[in-house]
Length: 226
Image 1 (tube, rainbow, N blue to C red):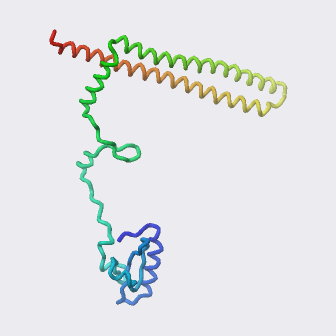
Image 2: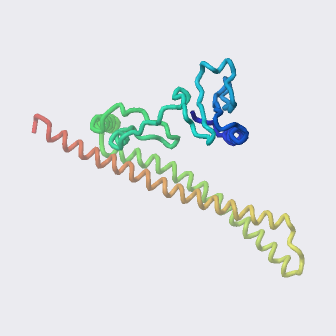
């Protein structure tokens, strides 16, 4: 019989007291009520005589265990069966079974690629459209950065002039300088992410272009006219 963690300490204390005060020949019964609480007593309640219970001797050793109260052991899955298991996601849930084989998935992707583009130039044009949008975002960030740099230099100049004059720099100025520093750092990070995204776009479209060329050559070789 498995004990709940929250009742284990209490149950052990009660068991110790019972065993210390119980004659050698007496029995101690362990039973679980309808709320799942574990109890130890020298006799069983009338309602539990016909229900599952364990019997312990004076040393606290179970001499008569009711296996209906003991959960079955967890069956170990052989390693080869574990390898056959579907992969799990980050939450531990089993991923759904793949609908298509890798070969079938590749075939579908190839068909989609050839239906989407009718020439290599269309692939390059599609890439340039996405890069053009990135360049637009990059120009906005660059313009914003230039404005923030001017404000930052102005605040630094003002703080330096006050220090040279022996005046204390206002808290407002110090806070503004820190805010501008943070914004400039965020701006720089955003521009760097755009650069990475542009490289990803170029790589992805290059893969599509290479695959398109491969399929064109393959289908040309399989054409009955050749």
